Image (cartoon, rainbow, N blue to C red; front, side):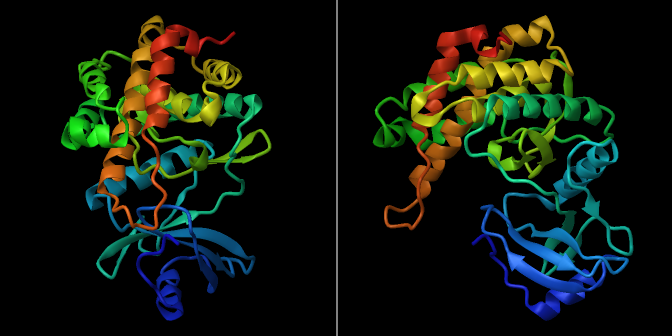
Length: 324
């Protein structure tokens, strides 16, 4: 269970009392998530009607100085009608509080479930909402650099080393050279916004084909909108061992362009961006694989899954981002 810090009933009640959400009724640890402690909180509600929230304690991989950006972006997008959970501010107006030396935030609970086998209709809806989010984020006044950029991915792979990568799979060392090319890719002239940058299916809540929530904005940054589309495409449009699902790919791009048509420059460079996006997860999975002891009770994620996706984008080129 992803609860690294224990907060007792009395501590939670005292914490919730700082918010105008009524009294604490129940708190349940949430198993999902690998970096933070999370609880599903139920309260009596500000007007006596029950209410639900997510309480998050930021444990690692998140800098305290980044929280105003992450939480402010949630509030900005929510206020514009995007399906994004708003931050519940405390009685002093603060978006987060300190508890046991760690930051905690109370976030709006949104209904929905994350799809495990997305349909084309769901992929279309996600593309559409992603484009809407990009347009709504354009006037957000804060900015944040991408800490998982293509140069960062190259550094991770080089740290793993050819020998370490080969110990996972003999084909992995070749990814280092591909990462050099991705690191040289210039996306600075492409249309920019504040992007999610990690929109896997488990970060999307849906009811049927309706997107009810985009969550976990903790890799969000200021960057090329095409990077966000490519990353989401790489995360959604494959059927595991069955390879690329063209129906999902076409639906996602069509959904995105129904709101925001891609420029010619974006369309031409998208395959290279998608290859760089795939390498990001090759790098992070390879690093985790090598850092995880053999006897650890953890199921490693195979970096070759995204190496294979790199090859799909290399082979298909612009066809992978066709709407028809």
